Amino acid sequence: MKVSVVSLTCCAGCVCSFLNAGNALLEILSSDFEIVYSPTFVDLKEIPNVDLAIVEGGVRTVEDERLIREVRAKSKILVALGICATHGGITSLGDTFSVKTLLEKEYSLLEAGKLLELKDLMYPICNFVDVDYYIPGCPPMPFLIVHSLKSIVSGKPPVRHNAVVCTECNRKIVPAKLDKLYGIYEKEADPVLCLVSQGFICLGSLTREGCGAPCPRAGFTCFGCRGPCDSLLYRSRDIYAFLVQVISKRTSIPEEKVREELYRNPFIFHTFIFSRFERAKARERVI
Image 1 (cartoon, rainbow, N blue to C red):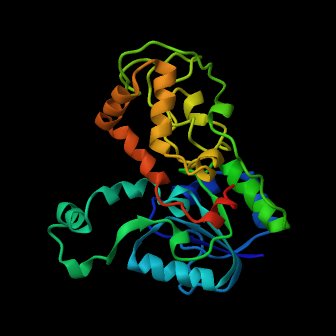
Image 2 (image 1 turned 135 degrees about the horizontal axis):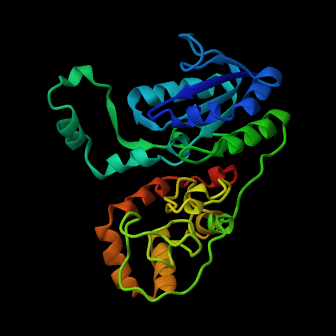
């Protein structure tokens, strides 16, 4: 199977995670894959026709859009790898500012003609082309990438993860009586109790499982990099309102005060990664 690995606007962390699969990656490369195009691995200027294209990054520039359309036209199967490609990603935090403001703040000393032409927002690739499979994560865990690609190559549907990160976390959820929320560095976390029960803003109750919950297991809050779980997607629930309800229930802090605390805490803006994953057919193909 001929494969291309393409990067749009991103940090390249998803390809790095792919490489971190180690021996499992070597097994795929020796038996199933022939990577014929990738700026990371192969010095080839033209994008060839392939059986499978793996794309990391979202569409932030006009050049990104041109590239993803060409990749789609030249591939039989297209896989969106990582939260930038599947949902818009952390880079979507830039959407809170206008393009003019972003350019003036970061590139005020450069001539406009020297910059790539930016689009109005950071978009997931499904806004421009049809995507066959989505592997979200920031970055996706190496084992998840490998298992998913092995299934795709063999013609079998990859395992679909429907539950939430809390089911993989193993921390004990207990009701608490608190009067405020905390940033993860403001106090030491109990290693056994649910982080929300301790007043931390953890998005595990909203987020699709499949990663193994490495962040909350290590004492760091889940920031939602796997995107929303099925129960939130299919019911079209207000994700922000649901988060407020969960935190209020576990901490006994009134919902109105929870909202005030969240507005004061910039951590909550990570939920923007959920904002533009609306196409119904896309929901069926999240891994």
